Image: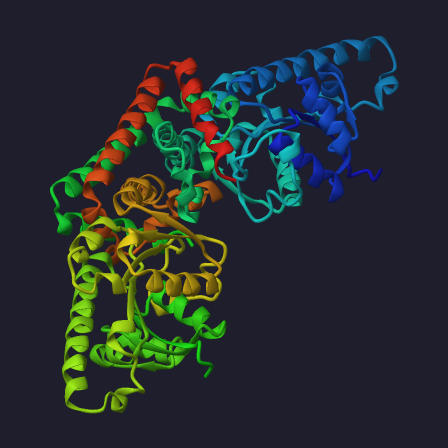
Length: 309
Length: 309
């Protein structure tokens, strides 16, 4: 193991945590990847697939890892990051007490508590940044959002290359120590991600528009069509590629999305209300047989061409 | 040219017409493909790309082709199919009058009017079937909807293999002559399409659910996000793959979609209203911080997994 290689502890071996584990190990950033997974089926799967070198208990992971990656749903992540920072704090205090008593070199194999870093990979940033803001070890926390994913979840969904070429948000990174930020920038550079620094509140507004609302519109579309399917069994014979791509996100996992939508409630609500207004404008134009209004709405929407490929 | 090969006249050299022209010629069903295109830029492009053997005036195309494919937006298609059937009718009458006067073999190189077939490829079926229902040449019309496409349009968007493996609806095919239906089944077999016979009204209900509403939700999503972009220039830096796939259909062409949405108004309106109700249920659950209701809506929507890949 080279001096530069780190021990990474991934807490939550799902799509994001699992995919990070794969590439950080393969690409040599991690000498060793430890995993923590509460769900016994997922833990077994992660070991069978070989996502991590070792599945270990949470406490052991926090103790042994240089970098802890908290990759669990956002509600749990807030609690976990705080708990890990607490452990950094008491670990460092115990260490400085022990230092006075005995030779510190006894502990030389485990990383020093004050050098450890914890990151989260949550889709909402404001709440986790608020919850940690006054923590005495706040500088050891780097709040990130790697903007990548699929509609699938669990260790089975993890894959190499998931993050390549995508953006990674660093939220409120001025609250972290420059050394910690630099280390985590190296981690994401290994994943070929493009770093963007952003205010946590701003991040949550933007993701409400370009990610969260897309999921809600897909959920609503699935609900609409499934409702009809109760009467018309063969309705999906006609489903085209367009339908599949629009409804794809409706497969997304409730454990992940319930806390995102409730944590980002105010922003999401604002976007949903705008969306419902646009939908009603469309509806009324169609209801009135007003071809000119329908045309101008479509032509306005077509401007999205300039923005996405 | 083998005896079996047909002269195909494609009216409207866009995505659908152009893609049919390519594969019908390549795969040997068509000996010759004639094209009609009103827009001079598209006509020039179709010739430059080589989509068809020859771009000809409309009247000449109707005269020379064995099979006419009307591939224009649905409003225009209704008028064109009726006009072509009128020409079949007067051509056959003039021919039977001429037969009495002179040797019919003079006309042997052009296909007999009574053997010609016209098809449409429209996304709505009820109006075109109603408009042609009492036409004396109704049997020479086969109303079809090949369920394939992309969000792009024009001759530049045409591509080989577009239809392979997809479904093709034959609407009210009992009103067409069995011989005409058999011929058009062979045409779509060449395109590797799976034929489904369906009542025109039923078709329009189904497509409202599995195609038209997807487009409307994408248009509304694009409008929502573009609205926000006016204040926040960098909002699209964060757009993920999920957003792109959900908003993709918002690039779709107004010329095509305005008549679809107004022709299928009643069905589309019904689906939009159901959709707005589902969206509001979601909105209210989020507004109330009601995690249980948000969860049960998402889990209900997840059932779409059983239906689409």
